[in-house]
Image (cartoon, rainbow over all chains, first blue to last red; front, side, top):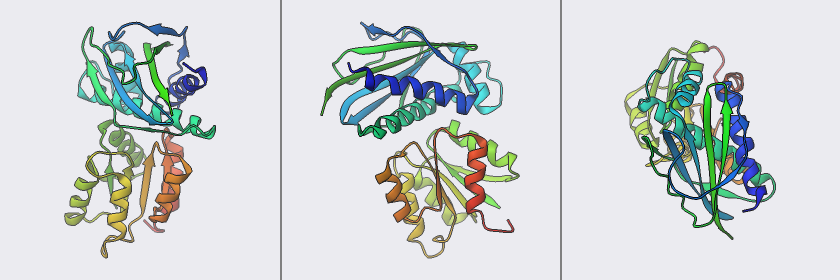
Amino acid sequence: MDVKLINPFLAAAMHVLKTMAEVDATPGKPFLKKNDVAIGDVSAIIGITGAAKGSMALIFTEQCIKDIASNLLGVPFTELNHEVRDAVGELTNMICGDARRRLAEGGFVLQAGIPTIVGGKGHTIRHIASGPCLAVPFTTSQGSFMVEVAFGSQV
Amino acid sequence: MTVLVVDDFSTMRRIVRKILKDLQFQDVIEAENGAEAFQLLQTNKVDLIVSDWNMPTMTGLELLKKVRADERLKGLPFLLVTAESQKENIIEAIQAKVSNYVVKPFSPAVLAEKLAKIIPQGQ
């Protein structure tokens, strides 16, 4: 998978969390994901079409997303309720949008769908593309989360 | 002054509502998509619309076009909140007579600045 396609998603994740929730996120070492099991408690996945077909997923541990949602909305969250899950969807939407904007600057135009939110211990994430799935762990002072990007054929 | 906030994600509606409250806009009503928003516009006196672009059922752009085509509503200030920052999309929104737009992610200061440019003087 072309790293030029991946880096904008990582930059977008850091930018969105900093701008909207005042959270600093540090990327760790990327790895190729071999199965569908999510490394976290709640996820959202968004389909991507256009110059390449694929998907992006955002996976949070429970503590991390509760704290980030608290920052985002200005109220404390102590449980993984529908408001916190909704925040995962909106963050996915914004990160994908920001990444598409960065890619479009280089003439690589993508469109995106509407995120689907899934959750529960050991839940699975099915990426749309049959190609490799690159996962990048992030750490924050609130806990950890993961960005997964998978692209198939480029048009 | 009543503001109609339209977004399919409650998170974004709450973020916008909080920023509006900080800006002293106390009367805020919400809709989850363009179709629901257009229905609310039939029965509520609204002074400003802040709408997401990408929503199921009816998008923000489709809502904008319906508002601009409605004799009673066509003059309403309309701010599009969007992840779509491609030139073609923005041009389409401008051609549909959007009052202003803000690209996600945005800080409260940026949203306030965009709103200040489209709110009628004296309100």
